[in-house]
Amino acid sequence: MDRRRLLTLAAAGAVAGVTGPAAAYGRPRARLVVAADGTGDHTTVQAAVDAVPAGGLVDIRPGIYRGQVIVPADKPDLRFRGLGAGPADVVVVDDRANGTPRPGGGTWGTSGSASVTVDGPGFQARNLTFANDFDEAAHPEITGRQAVAVLTRADRVVFEAVRFLGNQDTLYLNSPATGVPARVSLRGCHVEGDVDFVFGRATAVLERCRIHSLSRGSTTNNGYVTAPSTDIANPYGFLFVACHFTSDAPPASVYLGRPWHPSQDPDAIGQCVIRDSVLGPHIGPAPWSDFGSWPWRDARFAEHRNAGPGAVVTPDRPQLTPEQAAVFTPAAYLAGWTP
Image (cartoon, rainbow, N blue to C red; front, side):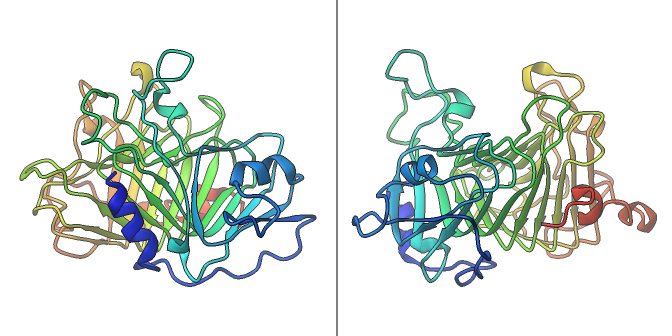
């Protein structure tokens, strides 16, 4: 990502679908304040995570906080809250990619590239930005360009009024292990990238979010929004409800998704439903794509009652019947959990 773009976005305030400071969380057991200028309890987010007990609240004052952040599995129910007027005022960012060399040898890999990794169940974040500003143009020698802003591997994760900024593989929604489900709720968020920028095997509901595809300068292929790797035993992967799909890319040059089979796993049968959403003209009449030798028609992709210039119904766009649509709802995906 162009660092100038990150700084511009950080100064720009709230974006469409992401507004204002979030409401208070209630009364957690402990509260720590992060402030880059030294006026809080800690100057880095990771130091606050290390110090706060399980169930604690980490309040983050406006600023750009650089460095990887890891929320460990033994710190459940942590809460991050940005204290700015909008989510652009607090930016948690790092800049490593899959192919970035590690100090001790080798490379970071996709999971290791994440600016923020969430392993603690019950994690919540509101009113801030998570970004990976790895500069692809500045590092032509790095061919592994997957650069994750946030990786989740925990259950019951909530993001509200949060921006996720990156290029390839921005938001990695995963689970602790193959066959182990994990639920994620995103409400009023902004997610942007170009290639497979919402991906993984978690069960995730994105409601009222802006899904923004960046242009890669192509007239025919500017990337893929989703790459689900849902386990075959899980009927629910990704659900987009009342979202806006936007882009500055040319018409019909962005795909809604393709099925990712990690390590060629035949049981990773991606599931994704996009419903009651507005699709811009960057989405073409054949919006699903094969992934290598894995055909999209063998995945579980569908739409329902979408609108906008990119929502034209064609034989290459499976549509849910009203009876099927009644099964693919946020409540069904979240399976008894109310965020």
